[in-house]
Image 1 (spheres, rainbow, N blue to C red):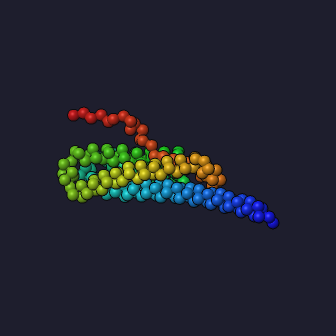
Image 2 (image 1 turned 60 degrees about the horizontal axis):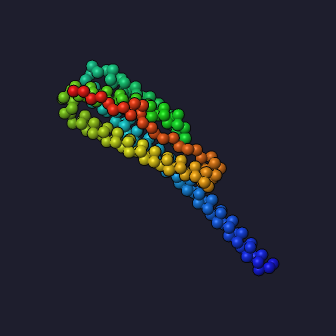
Image 3 (image 1 turned 60 degrees about the vertical axis):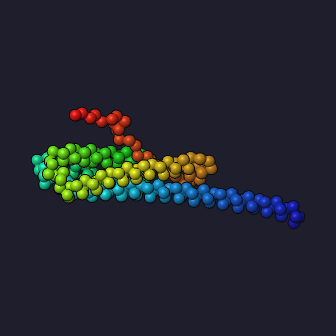
Length: 198
């Protein structure tokens, strides 16, 4: 073979190797991005589970002081029960309608817990109870964690969704069967400020 043929063959092989390395890099980047979304979702589930675990203790503590507030207790227990019966897989992040159902169930629990806190305001002894105060502080901390983890989930989902839409990542993402991830959205009515009256 001539020297020019070897040079041409070397250049072609070099280009093929570079293209393969670029494709492998894109593939690995997409896998890492999807795993980051999965990890963020697992953390969202973790903090929601923490809240679910706190609710029965909170309800029992309040029940001891406000036994006649049965309707409020039943609302909290029912909302918690609906959430614990939901069978969620990590695939929920690929299905916006399932994520919306999950978010609505969590919103119902938040609403029920808000009503429970209104009941608490009527019982000064309860507000001074150390067990209740500790549970309330844990619940407040958990609500903050939920907010932080939902925000983080939305951020990594946005990064992933952007990554699978840009060229040439888009080609590899389609080949891998990757779908855009769903986002947590604001609760219905969140855009309107609550009324405060004295």
